[in-house]
Length: 145
Image (cartoon, rainbow, N blue to C red; front, top):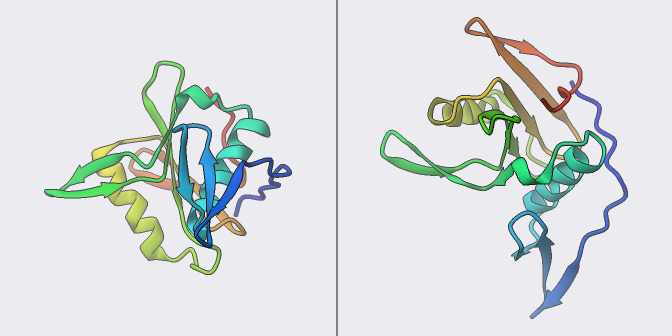
């Protein structure tokens, strides 16, 4: 398991018609503030402010095609050569990080191969590095390269 200490959130949040919206600074758009979106925004904030990942090399909720199905990954980090490097699947806090969640990110990895895979529900975070066809579990997130 990976220990994550989130920085104090400094998000722009507004309410309309009894629904909360959060401003996504990466996509420059207001999004409905669901529990999963809260996890995604906090995790991206952690990657940028704590680990120093550059916001310009972070893609959020992009569509991938998988066996003629259209799916969306949550977070994709590119390396300095702009090659997909780390993929994160976010879940709401009440969703356990089961084998099914890992399988989901592994399916996305078929379309978008990366070296690192991460799953998080905001309270628990797990990650793996792909090495020689095996998944090696991480105890910390890699430094951006």
